[in-house]
Length: 148
Length: 148
Image (cartoon, rainbow over all chains, first blue to last red; front, side, top):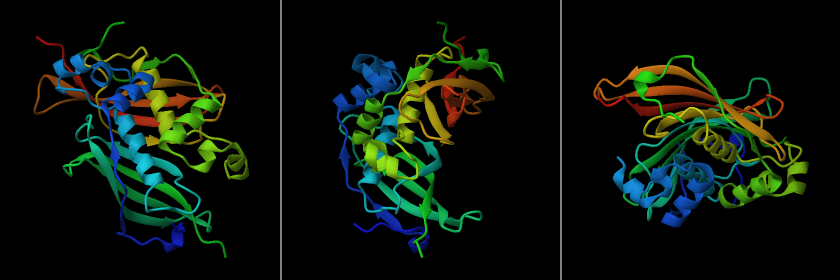
């Protein structure tokens, strides 16, 4: 797979990743380590909650999305080096969901101070098997230009 | 520890969590699962990279910060239910870092449509042992009012 430099990226280009199936065991294991709230780790408590059943930590959805992106078709030269992002979770990820990420290049801003690089804004929608958006991630990434 | 309802929160209140020591083994294990880029999983490759050594995935820093917050002194009634957030990583987390989170309530917005709840904006700074900010997370959380 070819890695893209900043000056090779095109506004509006879209990329779709492979899929990732999320099991209940994965959801509870991640949450036990990083987000041990009842609705992430305890099926009975989750059923009694407003969520009506076990849901993944938003940070687990974010981590899975990152794995899909790192393994996906949009490969940046120098890797995925995130400066920052806006993230939201319109609906939760649930056991049995099969996720994929659709990425679109929203903005390309050459660096003023460093002519060898630029900042790429990418919108990454994480979709479940019904096409519902479980995460919207708009990320700013640092990408080098092709060396001269 | 007492859980706070929306109508009990005060603008500008600050809360500091306990600490979390991050090992090289934890950094590479998280990254192997969710962000398998060379500078997160391969010490030699990381030393040769612009980072000069192994760094944690930003999503690992986010997950650790969440664990600190969930175990911390700012307990919301109903749990930490995030609607969305802005996150940035001014500098990376590195092996041996000891992280803590300082949270401050930035905004309290009662829901227009649902008088039983409100949206709280919290700025969560994750600091390392030198007081450097490794993550800035401004999160919007849904918090219920005290039932009447």
